[in-house]
Length: 230
Image 1 (cartoon, helix red, strand yellow):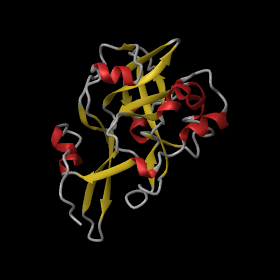
Image 2 (image 1 turned 180 degrees about the horizontal axis):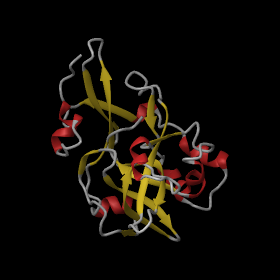
Image 3 (image 1 turned 135 degrees about the vertical axis):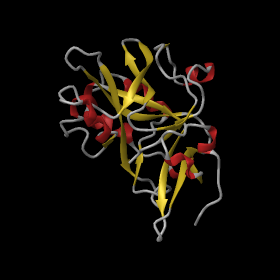
Image 4 (image 1 turned 120 degrees about the vertical axis):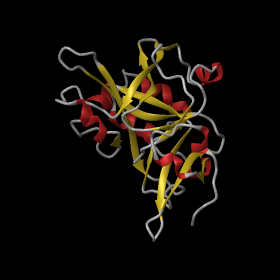
């Protein structure tokens, strides 16, 4: 799964806007930097709106339009690539409402034989920002403001990730981002080809302090490299 991630460059930075070809940023979108984005928090998400690529504030944890309670989102922070095209919670969004969650790293925890857990931060060796493949939904409760929510797609881990965790988030290749966001693309096989894992040689990781364990901590200390516990 993917349960925490980072976006340490401010969204309003011109370089970041050029990298993701962002045409418009909703004024309520958190600008960052963010060092410890956690489920149910609001984060910047990219989607295609006609000819424009826009950044919107969305809550992490998908609440399908048919859900009776928005709290279902806390259990739907990830969508497995193996079932997104068939599972009712994700199927329609997979074909019609795809998005990218902006990031530059993510965390996983490795447990030793004694039960101690060491958090690691995973990044691209280039240290470039990237987009997680995601799905979004608009949840409209009666008489209340609509809520936009999203989920991050995961897949089996590549060879680099396997020693740390059996699964990993889908990091879109730069050349595939436009196709993934294109709402006109509805072909299942073509979409699945966009969800291949990043090559192991492109990734690296380092241990970080357990301050990241609490979602209340969102400071540069979360991403600083630490000595390994084991």
